[in-house]
Length: 255
Image 1: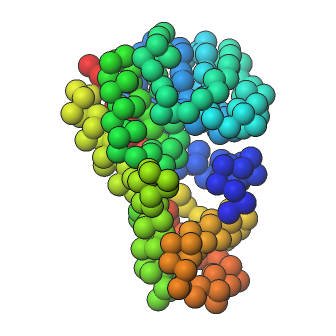
Image 2 (image 1 turned 60 degrees about the vertical axis):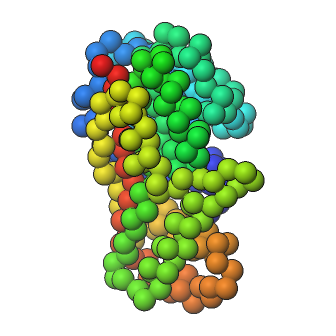
């Protein structure tokens, strides 16, 4: 990919993200939400999607560890009756003090990048503050291509292994994250509702589909260097398939 967290990649995927998210979960949110903290905000796409669906006025705290993305996000969330501020820092450092006055915590495409301990800590912080969470687009490990090819399953398996890789001393949960987070929230006393939120890619989104294919195959190659996928990738790029990339949206509410 152009870069997993680059402005160009995040901008390219934003329409597919917006289309995939489970809007019916927004209808289940408690009333009276006016302050929203968005973890790992990237370019601010979550705010641009969700803010129009919530009552105004709103104040968004856009949190990210990348100062360049944070600057972009705070400059590009322009919605009537919505104010924004930036908060530089890592999601793993979130405290109950950070959540004072917050009505909702959100994130998008983030949980699968965390470890089990990090999700446990995040859930514990949200439970202590009694703040609901809407976490969207967590990778689910479910990819299908049409027409199917003989190497699809091999690439998908290697990609999922890469998602579960050990990075430094951190073992990422990857596609196990949605189920793990759901159970952690339930154990903390939350009511949890999940929805599938698959990406729909294909020839009608050629730039995004091609970039996703390069990233998907690239991660598989990185995980299993012995795989020879040059012809596979070239063939897929020459005739773009229709693709479903599984994600899960999760809503957790503390009664």
